[in-house]
Image (spheres, rainbow, N blue to C red):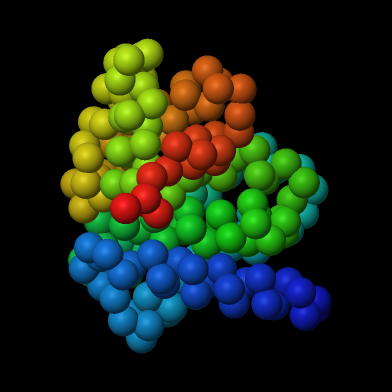
Length: 178
């Protein structure tokens, strides 16, 4: 039985994932997005003892492909990953739910604001990492998990360079700047 706090965080995590569809997503209806999120077994990675990186990676790939497939491939791999990553950002990073070490494994949600911020930060410093991060520059163009993984690997290199968690490359996000 989940606590009231867990229930509220999960509901909010679903809402933030849905809200991420406002700009550019080919699906924007609550009636389509929430049922897709319900198909993902988030408890599989959130409950239990310590989770290994390979277990998380397999779950993530399987879940991203599930959302894309269940959307009739209307949602690209990039958009499907964004839904999952925004949910995890809210539930794990902000809400402090999940296994003890899960925070070390979650991915930042990829969008133009993150690409812009990383590009601005890295241009004078490390164009090799930038090449990986910017293999494509639109979420809809992340059509397969292999491309997604190249981008995440670039983010991982940046996280190591900055001595932060993979998710914390989100510190470069410029989405709220005007």
